[in-house]
Image 1 (cartoon, rainbow, N blue to C red):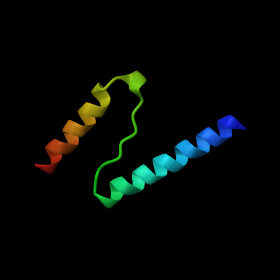
Image 2 (image 1 turned 120 degrees about the horizontal axis):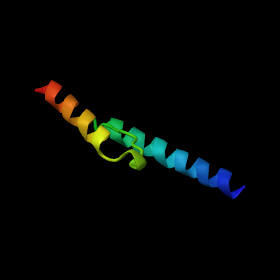
Image 3 (image 1 turned 30 degrees about the vertical axis):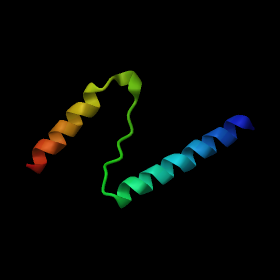
Length: 52
């Protein structure tokens, strides 16, 4: 019961955060911290380079 409540609250928060990011035209990128920051940073830099 506690786990289900927690999972629902996290989902609700993540959905709200995603909507706020869309509202302000901010990219919402989910990341796994266990993979390190390199994949996220690399994809960000590639996207930024394409915008030039």
